[in-house]
Amino acid sequence: MGKRWYVFGVAFLLLLGGGLLAQQGSAPEPAGKVQEEDLPRPVRPELASPRATMKTFLEAFYQTDERGNYYMDEPMAVSCLDLSGLLPDVRELSGHELIIQLKEVIDRTELVDFEKIADLSEGEPYVFLRIPGSGEVTIARVDNGEWLFTKETVASLPELHRAMEDRAVVEGVERQAPELQSLSAWLKSSMPESLRERIFFLEYWQWIGLFALILLGFILDKLVVFVMHVVVLRYLERRQQQVDLVMLRKSLRPIGLPFMALLWWVGISWLGLPPTVLQVLLVAMKFIVAVAMVLIAYRLVDLLSDFLARRADKTESKFDDLLVPLIRKSLKVFIVAFGIVFVADNLGTDVQGLLAGIGLGGLAVALAAKDAVSNLFGSLTVLLDRPFQVGDWVVIGNAEGTVEEVGFRSTRIRTFYNSLITLPNSILISASVDNLGMRRYRRWSTKLGLTYDTPPEKIDAFCEGIRELIRRHPYTRKDYFHVYMNEFDNAALNILLYVFFEAPDWATELRERHRLAVDIIRLARELNVEFAFPTQTLYLREEKWSPPKQAGRDYPAESARLQDKTRADAGDLVNEALGGTIPPPVIFAVPSPPDDAADTDSE
View 1 (cartoon, rainbow, N blue to C red):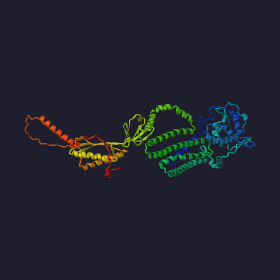
View 2 (view 1 turned 90 degrees about the horizontal axis):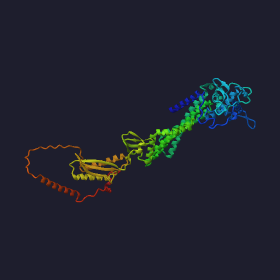
View 3 (view 1 turned 180 degrees about the vertical axis):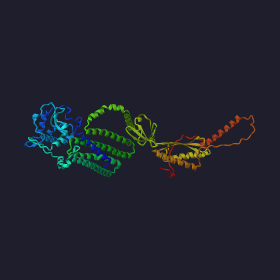
View 4 (view 1 turned 180 degrees about the horizontal axis):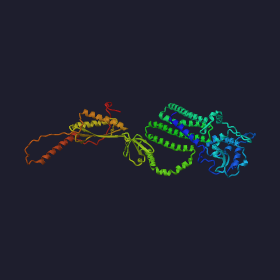
């Protein structure tokens, strides 16, 4: 059956054993539901004294219709019993059998003499019968002033009836209780005497029936889950919808529990169990059904979230990718909160008192959960302002990485070394968020070092060739880039390469940066331009003796002459380079591709 069903079976038997051991006690009165209403009502005359109650109970079996036929007024007889120790469902199932058992016990004890029963509205309880080890039949005054057969009497009726069933009806009884016509009575009468022996407050055939019901319930649960799985899969195939099969199987797993509990509910009503045992079993089944319904709703949220996530992946907007986790967590929180109230209500707990307690403690909880409230507003800030979306590369404080999930309390960021950073959403209200994922262009700034023996004309050709590569590459920004020699380094002539890539993600940026870099290396090879690397050159010079310089030489005049010549040579170089005109400021124009553009790199 599986480990889960073994646990359910053990829990079922433990609940049953607890109810049997507590048979001498009484079940707690469901809060807010009492036999006496919230407002006091007048005492009914037919229940105003022990004599009136006994008379009303017996007369319920002597009612006649218009034709003079006797019939039993079941509501009148049931009203004489204090059933406040039983749940409403147990009262409906056991009421008919309880009044018949009480009538048979009375008929087999003695002929009722009403003159011996007190007719006072106040006084001591009236004990009609007491059997040590089995119980007693007592009429006592309850809180609303009426006299009823006590809860202890109701609880001990099965034992009293078993102890008295071999006795004959006393003489003088005009009308006996009608023969109990029910499936449980028929089953009991059909069982051999060997199976009607008692063990642990139940007969053998009742224990066998309980174990059979447990087994049938598990089989029905498995069958319902299998059928639902097949039906859902066929429906999804017809609609051409994809779904995670593991999640679907997990979502449908608790759907058979209500059917299992329903089978148990119907089955235990056929076993003629004592009210206390029946009450424990009904509470257990109610608990199973309530928890199953909450689990089904909880699992369906996962299934719905998976469907919405698949739909969100097909859209270009990432806002729905951010919204789906919030919807999933919101629904789960609501289902858990509602489920607690639902389970408590099915177990007979005072839900109004529970909600009132939650309301009174709301202020204290709000003060204690100040950070949680701040995180909630932070999540709303992310939802409304949209500073980032799921999948964006962000830098928030010291945290840098890709946004993986945004929840009510925190935001999870996956770093580039694959660790997971959890940031409280309250930080997002005041923190500076650098969303690198929203960039249209990604910058690349580097220096290309050429050897010092590179001729100037090759430097110009190399720089212009790089500019043309930028103009031709499909992912580079064409309206803004710089390629110029701008630095004399210790071991190289540095050329500044300042370019932008129009790439949607880092992987594309790295790929296109690689392509441009490889093309630059090829261009350098075509021009016979060598890249420099850090070197040191050691010059050795032999010093020879020379006679001292003659004094009186005019050094200032010689220096001035040399400067004039240098200025003239520099002017000639500038005129030769500029062609006698001053170049205008740099204006980036995207050239049309030449005819051989098909041979260039394209994407």
